[in-house]
Image (cartoon, rainbow, N blue to C red; front, side, top):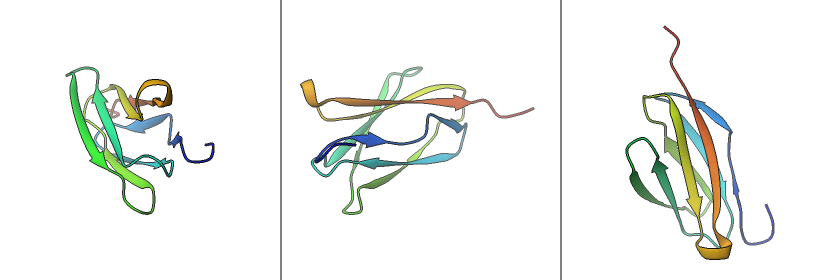
Length: 84
């Protein structure tokens, strides 16, 4: 993560769990995109620059997005299906 910007987090997470992502100092809001439903949720970034994100209960992908234009950063988190 460079000075003033960036996004860090896990590359996978269990369905129904949660993940913590770390956001650069210049970003005040992250957007969570569920590609399977198209739902976009904006979450404010707190002073500690860490955001806990709930993971959907279905397998697939979750996109975490910060910034816009050339500053846009996207983190793709693979959602692991629960074991039977």
